[in-house]
Length: 623
Image (cartoon, rainbow, N blue to C red; front, side, top):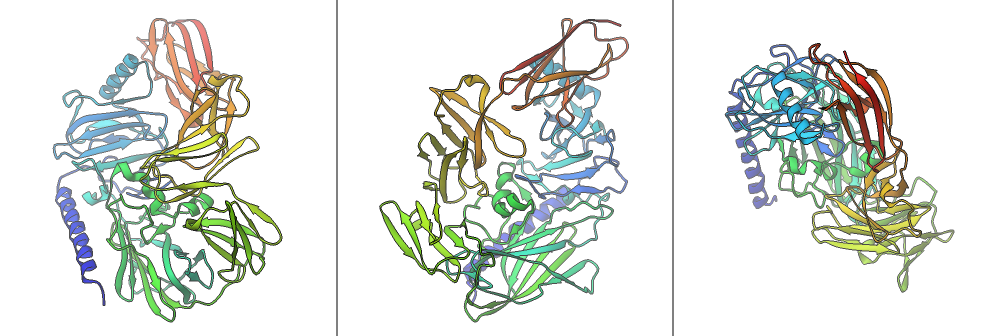
């Protein structure tokens, strides 16, 4: 019999969700104007709370006919309350606060309207900085409903021309702009389901006789309703123990090939709700909790976003879930009917049906090569192994029997092993200790140390540290962090140029992290576990003139390693603000009016993150 107390919580969650929807519907009665090409059919490149690298999408992305320069209009009267000019993120962005207390956001703009542009330029000159975050007073830049605030573009972190549009409620929380019933957006296409993953969550759990994570594809069935798509698995899933379900899916809207996000996911087992999450609003402060909402390890390795249909340990901040933990518990011999239902914002839905049978049959590793991983709290060793293994811990060793043929599990909460003898090889580990969430601490090995704060970790971290081949191996890169940690490292030999040497994160291209040196030791903050190294950058950026005249200045600037940090330009006695298109390495000025040309000596100075400076000079610019 179901726990009636849990039903109270579910009912309360439903009531709160309904209250929010009703409040949104009331807000939708406000005559907000669509921000771009109002009255014309719009196509979306992205939806609210869509799954993005390191964040939930905070608004909707509106396509702009694959070009820049379309008029962007204020959805209602109000005032400009914030302006951002940045080479990354929002790029050129305007925030407008309305009489309702809500704020609309317009990002990746090509340019601002003349009033806003003049205000921004004055502030840039006064602050000697092209990149600014400004908060004008309410009386400084008022806007009327439908007034043009700028032109659409591709600035900042945008990967193509579009308008990023948000609405934030009076409390500053991002809400779905589609709740405001913009008639320009149409969608009668149900979500597309691509794959299901099942993950074992306790030491005795098995999927098809194995411990770990397994993926399954679907068969699409005929549906009596065009607004509903039906899917099923090819076979009954045989499993036992505590399981977590994960779903790979996307949505599409009319006229767009973009793969967008879902609005709601619900799991029922034998007709009773096990889990639901509704992406109706996401506090901006917790947007990077996407890394615990999704299977981060799978995303890190394959770039695919599987949404967890259960709450992982440490996922306690984003208010989108039902009170249940969502974990599927299957006893031997049990048979369960499972339905996963997904909706988009327009209530088009897709359903997946499958049968689960509680079958504890033994499995065998499909890969004969010996490999090990850390999954949840267990060290998992699989492959062509002996009938028993020797696990060596500090000061002792222990015989380990197989969990099933060719698979061994060691509970890391019982101790962190130094090594493991498989009979054919000795596997050495670099564990240095256990880090616990909500508790600050630090662990070290030789000259390498990791320090964390109480808010740095989602879950218990079995930390490995190692210095190898001039690289610093810091934890498992497939484990997400909740907040920043600090790397402390003292190299064996003194560094010849400390001020030019910084910490870099390994990747296709080394990523500058930075750090501060003190007494021959570097201290650097990061949001990622993984592989790091020190590198010295002594080369200045390069400056290549593209077009220089009295009407416009254009340069191409590049840096070999640490990346561009700042740039400053003067013509005669005038400070000139140049915009930076980092995607195309382009630095450029606005086109000057004929009666206000550039005049005098030109001097451009570009500085990289290691402090190297490059200078370009040209005397006597004149009409």
